[in-house]
Amino acid sequence: MKKFLLAAAMVVLGTASVQAADLAAHYTKAPMMAAGYNWTGFYVGANVGGQWGSSDPRTSTVFDPAGYFASSSVPAINAIGIQHANSSSVTGGFTAGYNWQVNSAVLGLEGDINYFGFKGSATGSALYPCCAPTGFTVSSSVSADWLATIRGRIGFLAAPTWLVYATGGAAIAEVKGNFNFTDTFSAATESAAIRDTRVGWTAGVGSEYAFGGGWSLKAEYLYVDLGRATTTSTNLNTVGFGAFPTNVYTHSVDLKSNIVRVGVNYKFGGPVVARY
Image 1 (tube, rainbow, N blue to C red):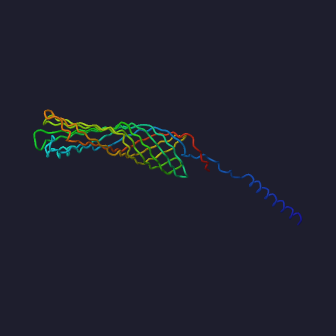
Image 2: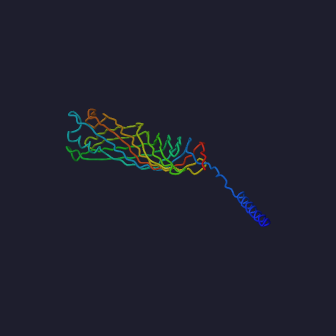
Image 3: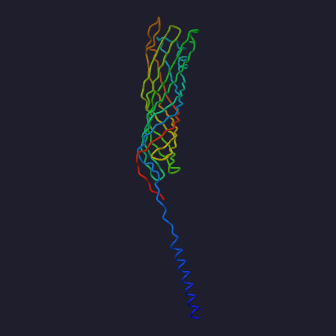
């Protein structure tokens, strides 16, 4: 009986020893800590794209009993003076900004300066109601060589390296307009020019993807409205009848554009967030 109990005890102790060895051989390491992308920081970049815009230049004059025009001529001139011009061109330029990341939200301030390339023109002609077959022609042209914007950005992270955002702020451009009036009744001429640095507004949406080393790619749409600029002239002159400063002309021009562009940004430094 004693021998049986001793043998049983040895079996139990041997089994426990094997199980203890198995337990000592298996363990799980703590997960490794990895660095996650953080959008906070200053960045610079470049962009290229296209703009599709329009302008509605206007030319009108007033009737004066002692002036050059018959009363029926003024409404005809004003109707032809309502004109429309379209423009499309390649755009491109440089960007700088700063982002602040707060959890999954990214707030930012961005500015850019771009070649705009807006150019459009329109021409209309009609006969004088009083004096056919003589008539008149109204011509206008609109251009803006550059465009700058200063915008806020607010977005959220669809993924740690993928930002979707809305943007809006001020749009600035030098808008130029040229206007000419001529007729065949007495070779009358009138002209005016507008050159105005306009401050309007812009708004849009975009998406940006960070792919490593501080670099990111973005695609963006902006709508730009630069408002309307106006000038007057009193330089109507004719051959044979002289000048008619009392026939005051009013000229105005607006500018709107849709911009689609892609760009690349480089972010300097910024914190790295640890994640498991």
